[in-house]
Image 1 (cartoon, rainbow, N blue to C red):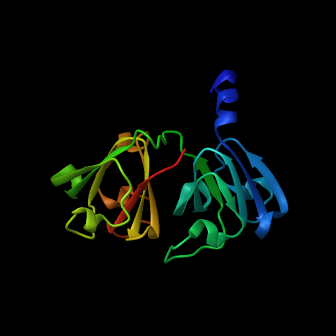
Image 2: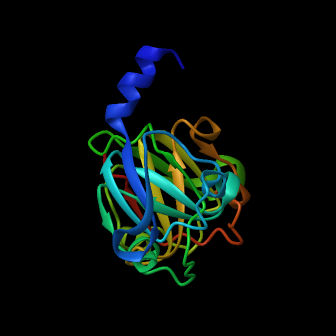
Length: 197
C-alpha cells in the first residue's frame, strides 16, 4: 500500500481495543488489521470502541475461529460482541477491517446446493428469518456475494454463530460451508443482514 492509500485508509477504519472489560487496562488504537494481538504485548482483548468502519474480530490469531461482526459503537465486554451467540468466547485475538461493506448497495444470492447449484434466491435486504422470507430450509449450502458485505447467523433473529460474507473475499463466492469460516461445522444459516458502514 502506498503512503496515500495508507492516509485514506486511516480515516476510514479506526478502533481502540482494551485488555480489560469496560475500557480498562492497556489500550491501543488500530487503523489496519492485526493478525495477533499477543504480538502487541496484550494478553487478550476484553472491550472495544469502534469509531469508524466495520471490522470482523476472531477468537484466535491469524483470523481463525469464531467470527464476530464489529460495527460502529462501544463493546464494553465480550457479551456485547458475541451477542446472542450460542457459543461465547471471552476474548478476541485478531481482527481486520471489512473494506467492501456498502449497506445501501448490497446484494447476495443463496443457493440450495453446493457449488452454486439448484434453486437460488437473491436478497438485497435484511431478514431475521430466511424461512419466513420463503427459503424452505435451515441450510444454505453455497452463497455468492454480488455486492457489499453480509453477516449470516446460525439461527433466526440474528442469533448463533456469525459468518461474514464479503464481495472481496473468495471473489464473492462461497462454494460450500467450509468456506464460511474456520469454525464452520454446518451450513445452517437462518438469518442474514447487510453489514453497516
